[in-house]
Amino acid sequence: MVRLIFSDIDGTLINSNFKVTPKTRQGIKQIVAQGATFVPISARMPEAITPIMEQIGIDSYIISYNGALIQDMQQKTIASHTMDGQVALQVCSYVSKHYSKIAWNVYRYHEWYSCDKENEWVQKEEEIVGLQSKEMSLMELEKQDRIHKLLLMGEPSLMGELENTLKAQYPHLSIAQSAPYFIEIMAPGIEKGKSAKTLADYLDISLADSIAFGDNYNDLNLLEIVGKGFVMANAPKDLQERIGNVTQDNDNDGIYYALVEYMEN
Image (cartoon, rainbow, N blue to C red; front, side, top):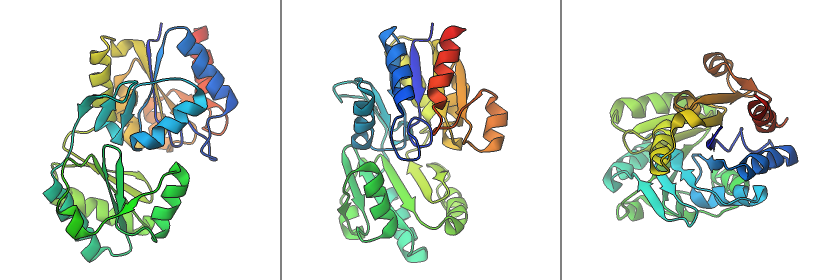
């Protein structure tokens, strides 16, 4: 029997209207009632994950910042991996100088800082997650430390080049384009798959007894490390081909139908 269920949020657990569909909520609550533990695992900050769990109506462990922060049901820290403040300052200074149209954001625990609250990308993200960032200057960033994530936002046409540049300059950092308009930067070695293993070990559960859902490349190591990984039909085609277990898309109850099939088998 499955004991752990990991799920990405955006493009996976929630639909295009940023809601958990009734069927998906029903499927999750049914399998949790049978003894499984459902764990959201996302690039989002904790405060942007909690309302999604409230939509479902369950308490859960939370893995945020792509795995950089793991918390229990009382939001006590199980594991935390942060980057040095000076490294974050270097990255954001470089972006400000060479890519002035790209907005940088800084996340640490329950705090979100943006370089410009008037930036359209920042405002769109605030609307999506239902939270407000606090504006921060590079001078203020210089005083920060223990940073869980940097998020760069901008036109997709700029992001591929910037990602390659940053990977060359900072090969030790975890850098990934999680959407055409987002680049996520975390401490070295941060992966969803590794954080899933950390939580499974903490709970004394084998990953062979777990399943996972995802829709993008930053979910790949998670989908491959669990007993069975399901990829959404809205995921890139090459990711679907690599994982093989393709369920319906996030607008058509993909998680629900995969859970029903899994429980029946």
